Length: 164
Image 1 (cartoon, helix red, strand yellow):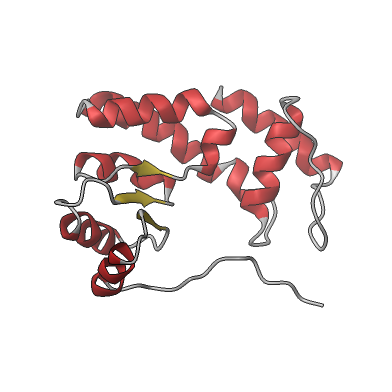
Image 2: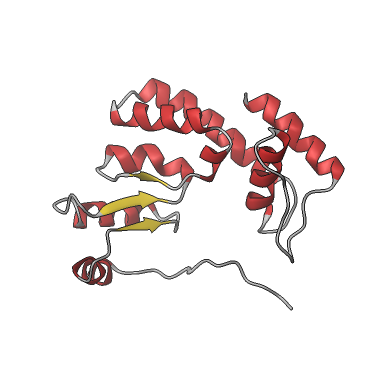
C-alpha cells in the first residue's frame, strides 16, 4: 500500500483565507514556496494583528518577518534552534549582514542534510537522523518509512559537524 504524506497542497486564495479568519481561524502557514502569494497574504491581513501569517519555507523567514509576517515553521529549528532564533532576531532588527551570514548556514541544511537520499521523505529522515545523532531522540520511522542506512547516517554526522 502506498501512503501519501499528510500535506494538503491546497492553494487558498486570500478571499477563502479571509472567510476562514471570519470563521475563527487564527492564522495560515504557507509552504507553497511562492513569495508573491506569501506577500499577498501578509498584505491582505496586515490590519488583522491576531491572524498569523507564517511560512513553511525556512529560507523565507527573513522576508516573512521583514514584510510583516509572524514567523516560520522551520524544520531545521529542531536541529539547530539557536540558528533560527538568531535568524528571526536579525530579521526583526533588519540586520542584513547577519541575515546573510545565517542564511548561508540554513542553505547548508538544504545542500547537505536535506539532500541525503532521493525520496521525498529525505527531509523528515534527515531531521530524525540528526536528532538521533545528537542524542535528542531515536530515529525510528513509522512504516512505510525507514531510518537511514549506516552509511547515510555517517554522512549526516559529517554534515552536522560542518554546520556547527
